[in-house]
Image (cartoon, rainbow, N blue to C red; front, side):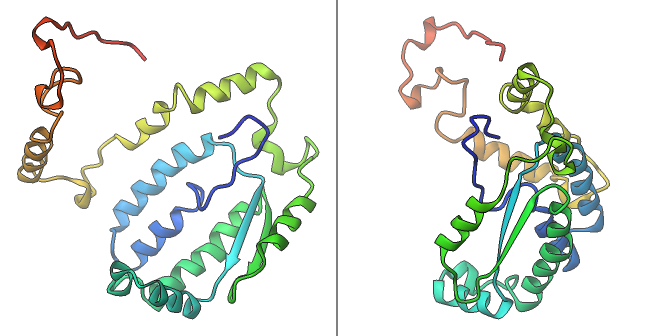
Length: 225
């Protein structure tokens, strides 16, 4: 989140990643329980963020997307059993019927037919014509109606120094979701590999294999952050 008033452009975002989760659940790549847990975490985190003012959607038909995948020639994409017409069609459905509808409640929406690729200059010109000076009573400004500079300072702290509060919702285990449970043997193997990696055996500054010196005379200091 940028508070410099210069604006930020993101290619996709946390606001649209549910499209992937819903599509994977539709085809059985994740279970219904895993999808429910995902949406629970999303409900507890995403509303804490300030939502964007503008969404630009470049609409590319599924058949054109598949041709572009073939033309790009990446083996992991060409040989993927996931990137099928059916999978991409379901993603398109999620984007158009859920994502754009949800974002339209609080953002300006610009949609372009990008089948043969359009002119980026036209998109820039359209963006420049959008009036971002919303009335404070406009529902689309609901996230941005902060009383004073102190409130803005609070948001800056929330998104920087205290950002770990967002992540705490992702650390609560749900043992009913089987695919998220790591078997004991797999976890031991993971830890063995991790601890055998250079610089991971001891605390930072105490690993001779990383060139750390004067280890015997060092005193570890815990710094509160």
